[in-house]
Image 1 (tube, rainbow, N blue to C red):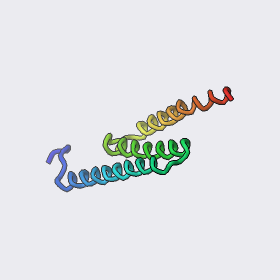
Image 2: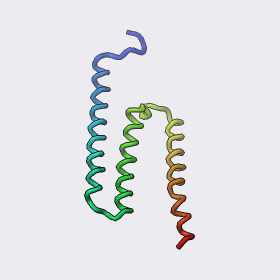
Image 3: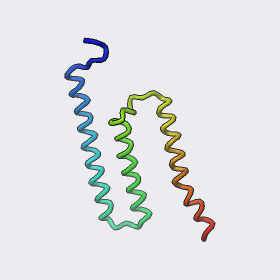
Image 4: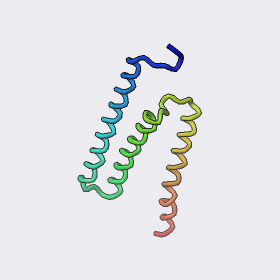
Length: 100
């Protein structure tokens, strides 16, 4: 067996992991739909929806995009992206303060 080949057991292990992640994504989608039926105030509904969406995005990035096996520099760049994205999302809140 060459260096890049996998055994049948290793492939089954990976496929099982993908099925578990897929099941988790389905459950989180049901939770997202359920949040819409709670009739929460807009801020709370958006906050909960974004939290669930972030979790789903993290699962997709980690397992389907194989980022879970990457080196530390990739994680550093990913966290920097998350911080800058969060800052960009908060900019409108800072600009609204002057319009009260």
